[in-house]
Every structure is written in structure tokens, then in C-alpha cells.
Image (cartoon, rainbow, N blue to C red; front, top):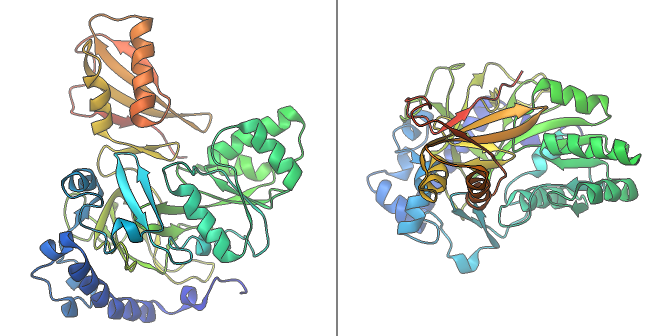
Length: 411
């Protein structure tokens, strides 16, 4: 296959734009005909007219934040899937909960392209540490690996010593997972005096990759690249060996919009990432991810010609991602509702030694260690993540309406 996964990556921008907007009317017609939700929202849209970015920009935006209520009102998929649940390959659940159908085609989420760009080649063993339980990340990367012709160790999350033992024994060439967990594995391998030097490359996602952590992993012999994907959309963008921004996947159209609107921002201005897919089973049109990014000018030095974005630059709303899992303001409200002693709360997310740490600051007039333990238990139950708890005086939290404060820096 040479330096590129396929010839789509190096076609001219004009050729790509023409091909995608020639195909888009079929996808919009499919969405109108096959889904109840788009039949309503696109009732006044003639698919044959949507042949340019300007025409696409006139279609209403569908927000990820709306999916929870929409799926409750119209189960199981909010009227957005063009196939019934019985025809899905698998059905996954993301925090919220939000349920996502998987189609039955090969490499449904298109992750093979990102793996190839990260240097993975057919026949190389991949150690996959993304979760396989309920959430789709493990299956997403595995489907891409299988399409690329790579066997996979479905390691999943946790059990660090077993992870180290498996790597030392099986000698995988590539790691897939969050960058912080790879760092934990390398620390544990050093403690165990285990040889994990077979790992020389990796594709990471689910959290930020600051230069300091990338450099630390490189010093340990693992050159990692990033990809940006979601359970709803599959691969959105990926990093190449140039390591200059993320290149948009060939299977989506990406717009950067002014948050809270449907209006595109000028090139270089930070805005919300909005994605349109060509997936027939789950045809999401102008799907607002809630993530912030900005377009980089010109094409990548690696020769791939698609649009580039700077990568993840925060959230347009207060939802944030911790250790690869989204945490929503509604989940913090659910935690508070279970503890009458707490009047208000604010979740602070920080990065300590390149690991995400979240602490729930709770205003409580009374409380002790038992209340702290009870709240921490509720956090684990509601958010599926561990969190610290700090009790503070009533009225001491800032009165700015913020429920989640992402205090991480990415330098």
C-alpha cells in the first residue's frame, strides 16, 4: 500500500470536495426516507439541492447533547438510525446513557486508516487496551485492525500486571489505548523488570496527548500518534507522521461552527466540530460534537491533502472527557440529588503527572468522612469513573453557573 492507506488521501482538495458533495444528496435522501427524526427536521430540504458547503450550512444542526432526551422519547436510537435494532451488528452504550448501533460492514468505524497512518502494517500484533464492556472503543479499534490484517490482543482496561505480562510474552508491535495508561504500563514494566520493548508504535485517543507525555513515551521507545473518533461518528480525524494537526478522515465532511449556532467560522478561528457522515445505517447530518477545534491552513507536510484541524481544544459546553469517558453536567446533578447534605457541587478536572484526576467540590453545612465515602461511591456508580471528594463551606464555590471546570493544560 506504500506510504498511504489508499489514493483517496492524496487526491486534490477540489476532487475530494466534488466527490463528497456528489454523494451527499444520496445520504440526505437516505436520512429523510429511513429515519423518523430526519424526516421531520429535513422535511423542507430537497436532497438534490445540497451540493455545496453553503447549502449544507442551511440544514439544522443536530447536537450530541440532545441525544439522551431524544432517545428517551423515541427509543432505542431517537429516530436517527436507518436500521432497526434487530439488524445492528452490536449495540453499545456511552455515558449519558447514549446508545449507538453498529452496522455489519467491515471496518464500520473506518479506523484502519488511522492505524495505517500510525505505522501499523498487516500481520503486526496489536495490544488493544480500550474498553470492550458496553462502550465501543475496544471494538472500534479492533474492527480497524482486522480490516488492516492485524491480529489483536483484546486486553481491555485495568489489570496492569497482566497487561505487562501479556506484552512481555506475546511481543506485540503496537499499542492502542489512552496515552496515560500506556505510561502506567511502562512504569509497571520497569518495576517488574519485564521486557516490553516490542512495543515501538501506538495509536492513542480518548484524552489529550501533551508534548511532554508524547516525549516521555518516545524516550521509552514508543512513538505514538493520535486519532479523534466517537462512537456516533467513527473516525473523524487522525495524525500522520508529520505530527502537525489532525487530518480529516475521507469518510466524513467536517465543519467548524461558532458554538451554539449553525454558522461556519473563518479558517483558524476556534469553533465547534460538526460532522456529516456517509454511513447509511446511522446517517448523522451536521452532528455537533460539542468539541472545539480550528482549521489549519494548507495541506499536511506528509502529502495527505484533506483538511487539517488543530486537534481537541476543549468543549463547547461543560461536558468534558476524563480518561476517555465523557462526564456530563447532568451526571453531577444526579450525584448531588442523592445526597441531601450537599447544596451545590463543582467538578474540577486536573492533570497530575499526565493522568486525569477529577475532584467533586461539594458545599455541605454538615459532613464527615462517611459522607465523603458515600459521595465518592455515587460518583463511581453514576460516572463510571473514580473521583475525589472535597467538602467546602456553603457559598464558597464561584457563582458563575459552572458545574464542570476543566482545569487541565496541554503544553
